[in-house]
Image 1: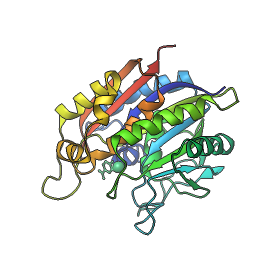
Image 2 (image 1 turned 180 degrees about the vertical axis):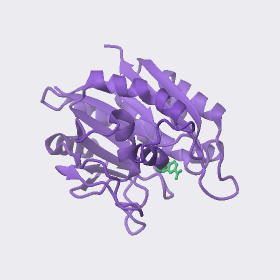
Image 3 (image 1 turned 60 degrees about the vertical axis):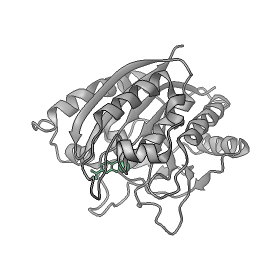
Image 4 (image 1 turned 180 degrees about the horizontal axis):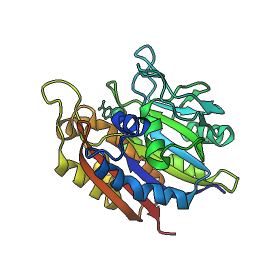
Amino acid sequence: MAKIIGGIGTSHVPAIGAAIDHGKEAEPYWQPFFKGIQPARDWMEKAKPDVCIIIYNDHASAFSLESISTFSIGVAPEFQPADEGYGPRKVPVVKGSSEFATHIAESLILDEFDMTICNKMPVDHGLTVPLSIAYDQPEEWPCEVIPLCVNVIQYPQPTANRCYNLGKALRKAIDSFDKDITVVIFGTGGMSHQLQGERAGLVNRDFDTEFLDKLTKSPKDLTKLSHTEYLRESGSEGIEMIMWLIMRGAMDDELDEIYRFYHVPVSNTGYGLLILENKQ
Ligand code: DHB
Ligand code: FE
């Protein structure tokens, strides 16, 4: 049986990928950040999951306004890093997990979550930056990856509650896969940030801290927040945080927070990192 060995929440700020790609980790701006994420790299090195399921959002790289899918899952054997305007990041091709992903797609759809199935999907910073945070710059990514993509960039987004319930259905799908593999689930995006308009540069440390506290201890409180509340408190792009609730929904109700790191600023955002483990 497939087994979840942990959940990771992390922002996916593109500047982090650029800092790694250009060897800037030791610069004064970046040094505290990379020190703060090292425990996650150490944890991943020990955990060595066979598969990472990465809940992320595409930023108009694979999808455009021509077609907006609420939830998509990548079932291909591989996913190419997307060209986001400066050429694709020079990171390894992302290896898929076709059989497992197809099982998850079937289980979710029969559970009444209408997934879009993607046989070809370039993956942008929303997915490759979390991989770089977890694994630095290997020749090959050491795990297979299932991309699970959520529309958070174009209204109407799914509700926080819908995301949490998708996580519960994802857990059922993982538990019913008949192969002995280990899985880490990533919820990515956020934390508070607004990249445009009058409030550009908004960071709300208090909201982010409360979000991290509640994600661990009382995630249902976060499912009750409306889009307007997320937008008001965490900025227009802070709503990406609803994706962390998919990861949380897939974990046990009671769990342990193994590590937390919060750092401001990373680019124009509040950066957050959580490592969660089920109790047994
Ligand atoms: C930026 C972009 C993102 O997609 C994000 O989640 C955070 C920050 C940026 O352009 O700085
Ligand atoms: Fe983003």
